Image (cartoon, rainbow, N blue to C red; front, side, top):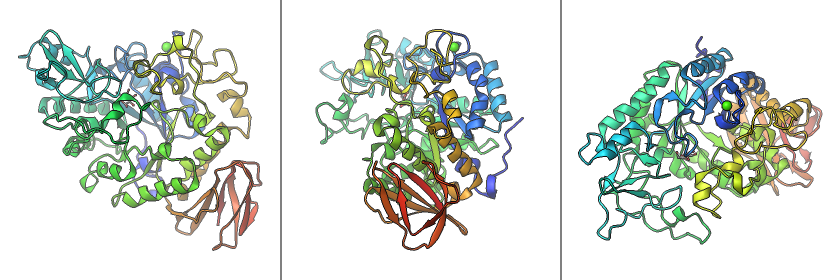
Length: 537
Ligand code: GLC
Ligand code: CA
């Protein structure tokens, strides 16, 4: 039943034209009333993805795990956690997706295992254990403290003392997430086998968690202090992660992973979680592009929502891309506050138009198509250990992980039981069901844009070039052959005039607002407050 590998528009590999959608499995659909989403629930919702019009779904981890970091602490890479289902459910899920021509991308967590993983249990058992060197074990510093100054991204030191063997082990995240030593060839072999296991079961790619952390300084030298640290920043921001991550040999590890997946048909894709500025992303594509096909680009999330800085970021990224490298764009994920909370409902629509009309592969986060906002979580219901470990530092990720509101009932069609986190929204009209019926909703708009991307290759494959900024209107051209579109995005809630000097007429292809399709457009264009417009020239 495989997905056809026919390339759309006769162009590049599938993931260049694709729109990717991230599912956080705990919060998508519960099928058995325990309040936690599961694979059966995802299967029940399979038609939603085709109705919406996405091409591939990336799932946050559903492997066996004590769930201290809700699945990012894996204790068996080769099985499904019973909370989510079984391997048989997984196979049914892949079949259900492939039958709909939707690809399946798994989360691959290579930097660390759970402290319950048999590899770590063995490793910690004695200094002589053959798996000792699979992790980072070090003697205490002369003062008895940790071996170096590395700070955990989940709060506190990156080192945990283990009384039995009187050494520390390294954990870039929680102390229950023990860092694997990728310089040990047996670790690499074992982790490559994990990729093969899932590729044999038909998956179409991986999102690689915290990939830069695989390459630490071989001498484990201290990280230098961060001169821009401000009180109130999260504690780990005291240091620059110069030695604790992104070491020189990172691309050796990535290149090896790539060679493994390249052995499989259907062009599997590697998406890598890299939180880097545009200029630093480029090396992750790899020498001669043998690295990550899509190193994630989060830069729009860090840029002030103003025309000039946004345009500068887009242009800077376009400029640093190595030859043959393909761009990608992210506006949200399970670690970032919801975009609609940052920008407001109106500008969240503009953000969606931008995400789906820039050159490159967009990665959507579930619920952003509804305009979901961060949910206020009562203190007693907070679940994310990152937030609980670093109170007041804004590191809690529960608000963006709330269950999907499917309908207008009290539990929103997500569960019949008690949802593990409060439902994503109980505001009337915000559910999938309500928004499907409303032509002007964020959901209908997103679906319309996704359909447009399929019909109009210029939106995925066309070149990108900026138009001069006028006030807070961001504008760019997309061009493929003779087809040329102009995208105009009004970043303010004020009426705007915009003129495109070099054209005489065009017609409307899409608007966030009510406008006649095909309406003729002349040089001087009037944009409504918060309007996004696509014009064919
Ligand atoms: C990545 C994940 C995050 C997780 C961390 C540790 O940043 O996106 O959710 O907590 O890695 O695996
Ligand atoms: Ca369940």
